[in-house]
Length: 164
Image (cartoon, rainbow, N blue to C red; front, side, top):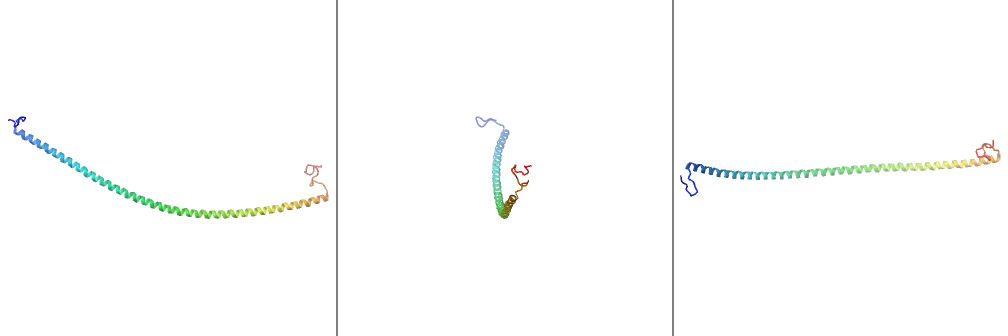
């Protein structure tokens, strides 16, 4: 068989049919690969879009949860602050009451102490006056009697009885 063109070889018609069939298969396979590539690309895009949508929804749920959590926390802090303020006021009132009571007890104790000191001083002064008066009386009696004895110191060391 002779070829149709200068560079063509002459081929058997059966081989030519096989070659044409192979070429058609190759073209179909290329078209199938291109379609598969396009489908994979579209599937990837769809998957990416679904993932982005899922991420946005997840982010929105997270933001809502954070906002709700922050609101619950703020509410708990406000409630706690209210209870703390109330407890602090009550504690301050109890402390003020206790301090006033303590101040009153201290003032009473100071008055009692001052009164007792005045009483002791008064009694002490009375005792000293009485002792001075009795000493003067005894000195007059001794002068009148003029009798030396162990109760009346002589010229010795002042211990009485030094003249033995």
